[in-house]
Amino acid sequence: QVQLVESGGGLVQAGGSLRLSCVASGTLVSINILAWYREAPGKQRELVASMTNGDRKYAESVKGRFTISGDKADKVIYLQMDSLKPEDTADYYCYFGNTWGTRHFWGQGTQVTVSS
Image (tube, rainbow, N blue to C red; front, side, top):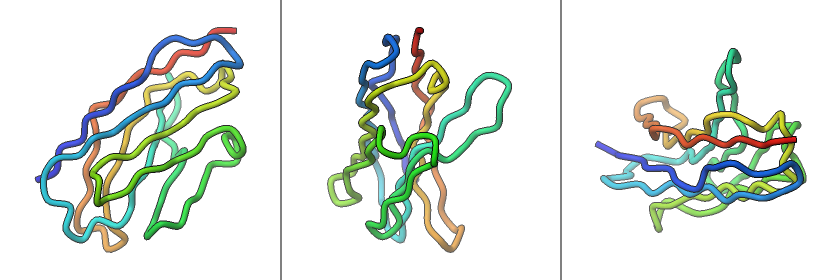
């Protein structure tokens, strides 16, 4: 079993920055997707950024502003969020899984609020 714990959320003014962390415990055998999702009030959960076998991808809305980093070996991933906008306000979740769909784990979420 894998447990994921996020931290780093909070309240920030528009234009500010936050860095989210996600620490994993447990066995990460066959895990090859490390990702961040977010869920805003009244909206569906969406993919923000991911690393699949090291290949990074970003949602169009965060390209150039957010950076995903970290790796499975260190059992930690980060999401550096710069130039934050009010529309980035959401609960942010880290996700560890694999491309075969046989293992998938979620963190408990951390809240990010961006004021205008």
